[in-house]
Image 1 (tube, one colour):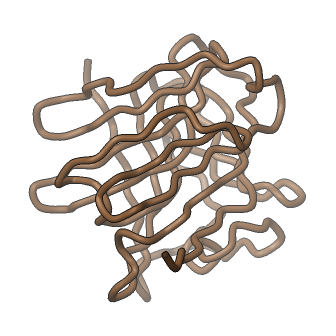
Image 2 (cartoon, helix red, strand yellow):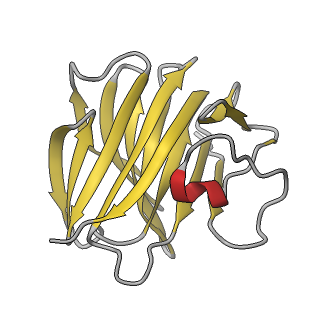
Length: 197
C-alpha cells in the first residue's frame, strides 16, 4: 500500500493560501490554512477546521508544533474531533512525539468503528500499541487527550483514562493533529497546556 503523507509544521513563511481564522484551533491557528490539493480539502466550517479526503486510500495529513524549551514531558494536549463521512479505515486525532530524523511519531486516533487506537509510525511501518472500545465514544464530537508525566503518557477519550505508556520515545517531540485515509475530519479546540507537578 502506498501512503501519501503531507506534513505541515509551524515555521514562518512556509505556507501559501489564505489563513483561516474563524475556527478555534488554539496554537495551531497560526499555521493552519484553507486550501485544496489533489488529495485533501482543508477548509473552515464555522468553528471547525475540516480535512476532507474523498478518494486517496492510505493518505495521511498532519500539522504540528514543536515544543517550547522546557515544555516536553509536562504537556497536556487535547482536541475535539467529529469523524464524518468515514470509511472502514478512517482515523483522525492527535499527532504525538513527532521526531523528524529519523522520522517517527505516534498517532492517537478516533476510528470509524468508534474505537480509539494508538499507533507508532516509523520507517518500519505502522505498529498498533493500543486499541480500545468505550461506551463514551459517540457519533459526533469526541475529545482525545494525552497528558505527559515525564516520559510516561496517559491517554484519555471524553475524560476517561484509557491507558498509560512510557518509554524513551515519549515525553518529547512535536504535537499536532492528524487525519488518515478517506473521510471528513472536523477538528476544533486544539489545546496544549503545561502541567506543573
